[in-house]
Image (cartoon, rainbow, N blue to C red; front, side, top):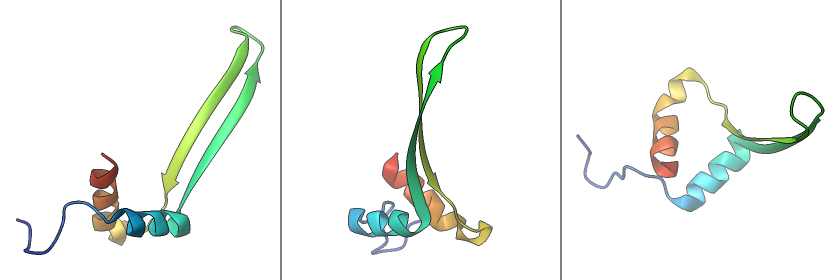
Length: 65
C-alpha cells in the first residue's frame, strides 16, 4: 500500500546527490592475450549502504529500473 504523497520512484536530483555521496561508477579496460585477443571492458555502478537502508536501496532500484 502506498501512502498518499509518496512516490514509487525518487526525484532525479535527489538520486544524483545520493549516488554522489554513497555510490561510484568505474570503468576498467584490460588487454587480453589468450585465448581471445582484444580488450575486455568492465563497467561497474555501485551503491553501498547499511542493511537498515534497504528501503532506499529498493527505491533506487525501482527508479533506475
